[in-house]
Image (cartoon, rainbow, N blue to C red; front, side):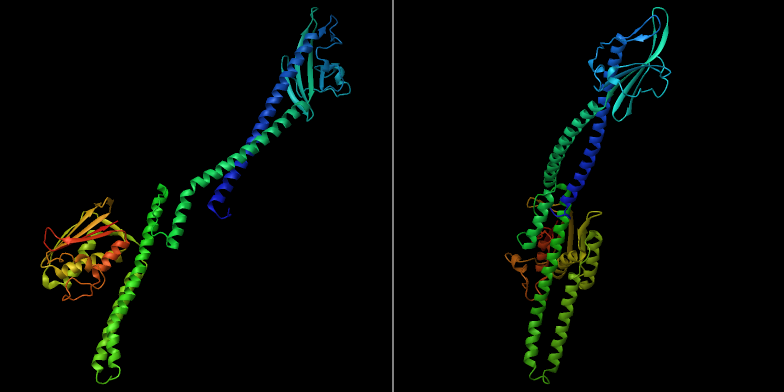
Length: 448
């Protein structure tokens, strides 16, 4: 796994979080277990004090005595780990168990008060429990004593070490299992990203044309934008190729004429100059066309009503002699997300053809969210004119480059081909037939 990959970063960050969590959990659990073990030890020492109290006696002279046979055998054996002391409140020793011989007498850190206990670890190796009691015998003699029971910390230490060993073993096992689960979950969660990356690689190798897989909802917007970008770039490439082809074809005839006139330049000076001027216009036109289409412009939302009125107003100046009546029906606040140059190509060519062929009327209708061939589109732009229309069986022919419906009409025969190609590249659909309303041609452009 590469260190710069998203999977590695997520797995490393989650592993670090798990390590910190388990370390804190281990510390908290170990301390909780230690507190629990010390509480249990305190209760056990309290029981030992009660056992000593049950065997101790205060004689008539006011002296406290204990029998040689104590209820807990560990009090009798030296070094057994369990020790007992009885002191006056002035810290003078009254009695100690045989097991405590040689040990310093512990003293409470403060005055307890009758009936109170005090539990502490006097040093890391031993725990102490002090119990203050007032004893009164039959003769009415009253004495105050401090019973102290101590036990070595080995028992608690062994318990804590045993618990720590098993705790860390289980935490390591759980951590490994969780990391494996996290890795599996990451692989599953990031699978949509790998799918879209593989699809992009397939597009790069030419095995696919668009991102057409089933992606998660979070990636659908990305896939749509990438598809729009891919279609946009392919449209530019296609137009570059077509522009070069058009330029080469347009220059072919003037070059042939110049070649024929080169031998008798003086006699054909006017013809040569005419052809040079023609070639200059052709080159200038094609370069302007390539520049207008080729430069990379940001895609933006275009208000369709204002756009159509602007184009129709420009065409009115060109075809002023026809006095065209325009009927433009566009929904309010109708916008389309497309490059402005592409929209000019599509709408401009269709309206220019309509102006060229119509008698007096052109109607433009825009419908939002139409459905065609079991597919939803964003817009339908329909252009109708009252011209002669296209003869039956010739619609497919005029969509081919260089073919015109009427060879007597001035033009290059590539306008509707450009529209058809561009609409197809954008993922739309172009249809044409007879207009039922005006009787001429009706073009319908479905845009995604």
